[in-house]
Amino acid sequence: MSVGMERIDELGGAAALAAELKTRRWHRPSGWHVLLLPVALVMAFPFVWLIVASISTLAETRTFPPSLPHGFPVQWLTNLWHNYGDAWTQAPFGTWVLNTTIVSASCVIGNLVFCSLAGYALARIRFFGNGALFLVILATIMVPFQVVMIPTLLIIKHLGLVDSLGALIAPNLVTPFGIFLLRQFFKTMPVEIEEAARIDGASRVGTLVKVVLPSMGAPLATVGIMTLLWTWNDFLWPLIAIQTPPHMTLQLGLQSFQSAHLTNWPVLMAATVMTQIPMLAIFIVAQRWFVQSLASSGVKG
Amino acid sequence: MDRLLASEHLAGWGFVSPAVILIALFGVVPIVWSVVLSFQRNNLMTPGVWIGLANYRRLMQDPLFTQSIRQTIVYTALFVPITIAGSLAIAVALNRKLIAIRLYRTAVFAPVVTSTVATAVIFLWLLDPDFGIVNAMLHHFGAAPQQFFQSTSQALFCIVAMTVWGWLGFGVIIYLAALQGVPRELLEAAEIDGATRWRAFRRVQLPLLGPTTLFLIVWLSINALQLFDEIYVTTRGGPLHATTVVVYYLYTQAFNYFHAGYATAIAYVLFLGILVLTIVELLVGRRTVHYRS
Image 1: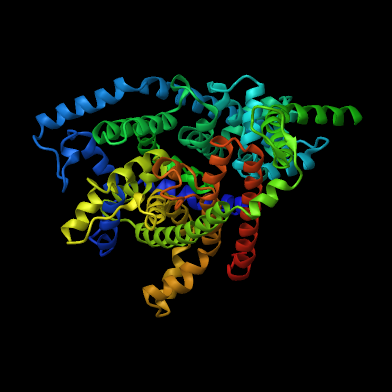
Image 2: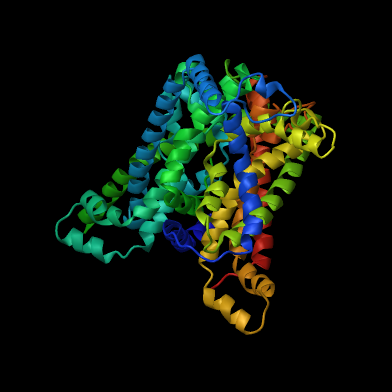
């Protein structure tokens, strides 16, 4: 837990980093390129080689040593058309995108609403059991998912949700860590503005929605992005809770596609590209928000 | 006054009730239930049978479980330091204004949002024994082709390399955020006092990054001990159990052999391991890390 608190102290640094990512300045050549260029190439190479395979023919991926696909650009485009087309028709990728979007969107909205409400109450309202409840929430943060995984599956079974999107949504609608994170932020905010709003006759909910939340942009974005990354890229829970392709998410779908197309590298790589494009696109557009969120929450895909 | 307080209690519980219901149902109940499960023989279909501590006793004599612990420790002991050293070096290099800095950063950050499944599929292709590019490079330099994921001696190291690639950017993000918080005046003051850049880094910047490094050690260890996705997609614990880590073993026990009670006992041992390691890391960290007041 103390780790989480240190994290929050660093939000200032994260915000500065995020702001700096936005600005673009040019400076004189530097020796640091000697280190950074190879690092960037090594980090980017798996993506490059992934895309190369996805625009090769099957025969070209079965030659040693490998080379770039022949026939630029016409043959490359033809290969691209065939591989991506084959992947798209051989598995319900459209359904998987839709499923993942539904699950992620529901969980992001659920977390933003429920974590805000609970975090606010824990920080500001002195109700019976506040302290005990906070301790319970801290305790659940520490328990690894593997401990609760099997009973959660049994509960999902009892609720009749096995092999449905509900199984993926219900347990992830609220994250104890999100409550904790927001509570800490509510605590740091000056209480005077809220009191003024309350004296002017605003309700608790009105105060929260109109006065408090608008100034919580960064922590709310953190909770939202944390939930998005977690639900979008989660694998173990969908693997257990989902059995049939129509209810799969992108990652589970990709894994099942992989075990069905073990050595058909071009089509498998085309499928991999397709499954990663949505999140990579969001990441590139909203890079500074992602960076800030990762720096303060510690979630990775 | 009493009425005001009553309304406070009501408002408070009203605000927390959705979260409380969900956390009770999917957090507290499963935790309690899993304690019961770990004392049962349970195949997930028929009602469980109470067998006391038998699951835990069996764990201590299970050679495959012992092996999975050993492999998890080896993995963690490699993954955590490599990721930390690598991301610190890259973060320090990235913490300046350079031409193409955004390209560098995007290249380093992109694997972070790439899913574990996709990462595993990509590395299966890179490290394919027959047609993979890595073997082609080895061939180019006159080295013999390697079996990588299909080799009992190499598979775990391939998993380390793959997950380091996936997590480096995360460490870089954390370090960059912390580096931005180091006042430039401190470094300049050190340099004016005649310190070389390296000494300024060693004596000024590095100690200030202590708390960040401690956080990363704890966080990366917790995640490393729970390694599963990449194993499932690449090696399924093989070849010959060479990459069977604790969570993968737990998964096979629960969902291939339907030993749910036994699997939950494994989960509790894992929980204990995570707890002990985290506490040790934090205790050692508190001794060595200096916090700014």
